[in-house]
Length: 128
Ligand SMILES: [Cu+2]
Image (cartoon, rainbow, N blue to C red; front, top):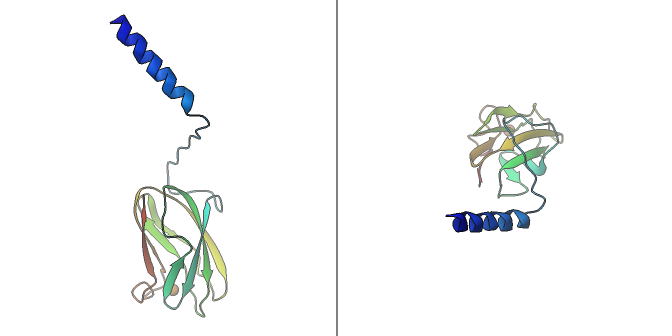
């Protein structure tokens, strides 16, 4: 048995020497420091949401919400670990930021102004 244990130790040593510079992070909640994440631009108009990127991996994101429309909009995000995260109301031509930590799963990005989601301001994303 000593021979087996010895070669197992060798394999472990070989594995651990190759990694190098792995950053460890442990996000425990959806709350994150404002402005600290990967920036994604959300352009809002009547009545649509457009994202600057469409594929997401788990991590912290700052959604820079740009109201390019004429009336008041906002951005709300719902999904695993993120509940009721939203920007303040954004006047036409103004911007607001929303920072959240996304995990694997499906999230809904939408405008929380009554009626707007139903009119098309709704963008589901898949984090994987
Ligand atoms: Cu809206």
